[in-house]
Image (cartoon, rainbow, N blue to C red; front, side):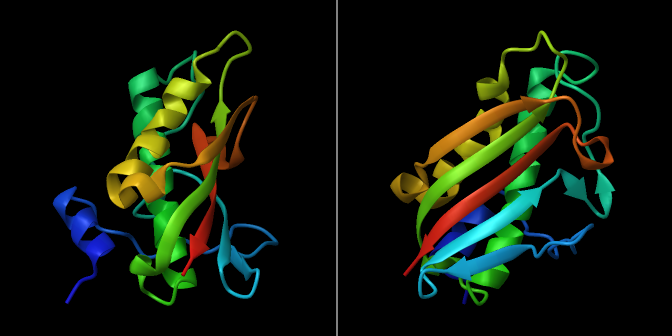
Length: 157
């Protein structure tokens, strides 16, 4: 029987993918603080092995597409988190922090709106425990020309 968080994901029409393997010299997550804190490495908007959203916000990528990219990044973060939590997302007691990197043109200033795609999904999935601290940063480029990258820190119980 699926847990509470898996049921909520199903209600939202979300199926977690197989977690992506790292593309460089890093691990997808670390578990620290006696197993109560998970730090998930940045995830790009990969769907079925392909970066689904490429380019720059303020250029060829709309805010709406950026929000969808951020949402897909968080889905990929959650796939890594599920592995870190031993397959049980109900162990997550709090989304502590999300970090967002937005590939954008120099004049783009709507980073926060883009990152809301990930933040809104975190709250939709985890409820009040999904409210989190956040940083959102504009960058000139991201790996594989991804439009957005999202990382996260989560508390486990």
